[in-house]
Amino acid sequence: MPHPDRTRPPAASAIPAGIAHAFDAFCAAERVPDDVAWRIRVVLDELVSNILAHGTSGGAVPTIDVTFRRDAASVSAVIADDGPPFNPLARPDPSLTLPLDARTPGGLGIVLVKTLMDVVTYERTTQNVVTVSKSIGPPDPPDGPGA
Image (cartoon, rainbow, N blue to C red; front, side):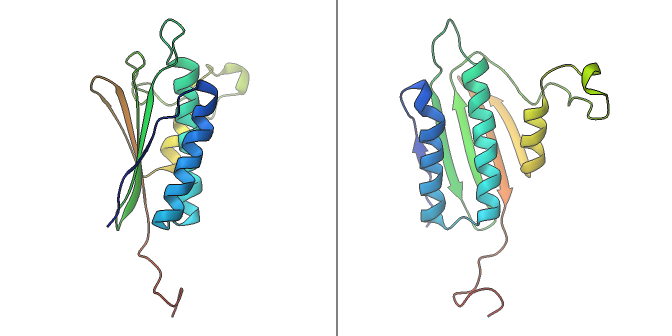
């Protein structure tokens, strides 16, 4: 039966690597397809980097909890932090057609997140909670594809 895996690395500099390591272990245990794993890995890196860069309050490193889950149809990650309230989905997507010098900086990372994932949601509880999910196909038969 699929099970969630949670990680909470302690030091700010160790957070991205700790989460990546935990996700890689989860992917191995749950046999997550490579094409899904790399997408979620990129998304985790983007979201966690943004939390560390912009989610500090008074210089304190936010606490970040990440939970992974796989079911028959999808793989998901829930990223929660105790930083100031911030909904990354509330801001309109930046124009990708304007010349670079006419664009307002920021927002491209969340466009990447939304492009790579099938579902991206935000909820404010006592924390910022972003859930991302990517659909997966049915598992290969025991003898491999096309068997």
